[in-house]
Image (tube, rainbow, N blue to C red; front, side, top):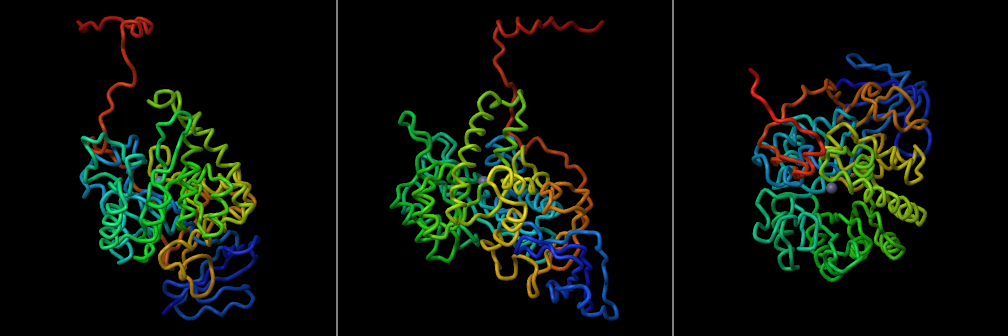
Length: 452
Ligand SMILES: [Zn+2]
């Protein structure tokens, strides 16, 4: 079999703090066969390819542990749950996954989707039908009447196309967990945040401690990973005590939650990019403009304080951007999460790189073949113009991404033709304000006259 030898100006394996200079990577088939100083590298054989990247930085492919490929860059929750046929959404999700791959993300964890969209795309990619990132995924998120994803009034309930799935009791949850396990998910997502009706309480846990323990026990008994959404203090605490694998957000985790996460080896996935983009990009015409950025700022400040404490205590972190919404479109902002880890959580660039490669790979399918560059690992790697160890933001610049390899094969980085969006994908927003006589008078509207 012919091999590919990559001459690397600088090589960051995904371990340590430094990149090594003048290294060579030898790729055979889908894997790395040899890695070391160019002076000691095996000679290229007949038919072998030698790629000279002597001026470039070579590193493992990025892992994004919070990418919702089925959400369609949604502008409203209804866009995610109700609009577009499931079959169209599946094709759209494949298109989305490919955009993420072209941004240098060679593996993703998709923690919630409608139907079995993400497991289906996972199989389509894994069996070689289509190009795409490696996918580890959950299905519909289990939720109770206190929780995220239980958006709709009780008289509507859970439409079959919804991202949320009803699990009001442990008995209901166990049934859903077994169904989803049968249908091929890698993980089960629990929605741990609920809204308290008690004044001043903010978020409470959507499930009791005992309910959480029982659900996580069943998830683990079936060999699946338990993933939760928990921005609030209590949800994060119950999840950590129950020994879930991943807590997304954990913005308000307290000392007890930190201790439980440490004791049980839970990974925290801060997912800051959505918050940061909501703060930075919110437009005055957005329906939520008046109140949204302020609560997002407060959460980012809370997250910065609490997650720094968790890091100092030794809790493990992974990286995910929460891509899939209108403020986090596919392939545009995935690498901004590394910048957010540096800016708000005190990571060094090397720590952010390790977190978004080797550390994040630990929660994926086939974790033993992933995670850093070393002989025997899959050849998933990026070739960058610039030095992310000096400036982490270079990873966000598409022009500096010179090549992406997945499983030893070069990914076609030609951007997709901009996609026309169909009316059936969206809820029908019509007006963003109330046109009372007073409001209209203030704008000085003139009567419309038919042109003569
Ligand atoms: Zn999410």
